[in-house]
Length: 253
Picture 1 (cartoon, rainbow, N blue to C red):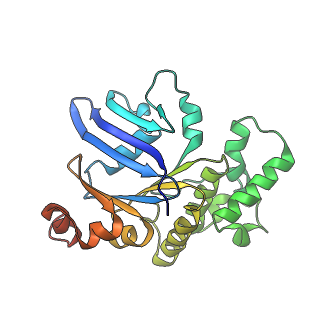
Picture 2: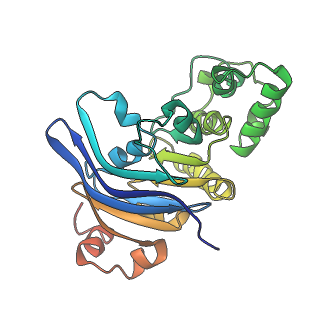
């Protein structure tokens, strides 16, 4: 499959106060591919992911230098509209976080916040988003029940539907299956493979097998540094660095 560059971080550094959490990260992400970020806890994977849609802006006393270029524009430029950026770059978190509203209202929420009032358009988008998140058949007869009545795996797919409803171009997933059982995890993994036909996906995962199953590229982080990045098969079978091999084979981390 031909690779089209969608997003690129260039010499990105990130600080929580005086503590540097990311060191000089340069990484490319391609349209309609899945890139997995792996590495031990606290190595900077989630921090990096949150830099991509500027979620870290919400944390006091943080600082960024370097660039993240998205479709030719630096997302840290002062002129950039952060609200629009977060519409174009959706995010799904580790624990399912549905709103205490109906299933329908959860998916419609972003549309309404963005000023869409056309009831027919909202209904069509909700249905389309639930179909894309492989949840429609399970909830189509209970759209007005509370989202909190769904199972954990269904709640996570609902959160994916909610992210998809506002038509993002990139989907960030921060360990989307870590709180789920194996069957629900498989559904999320199957869904990721389907969604990459439409979106660019960046997933943080602790699960090495999951990275191997769902991603086209894998980047290995350690202590805030990017150690190695390659296509997933090469990284897992023929890593260039011993440090990467030791992590993948479970010798440390």
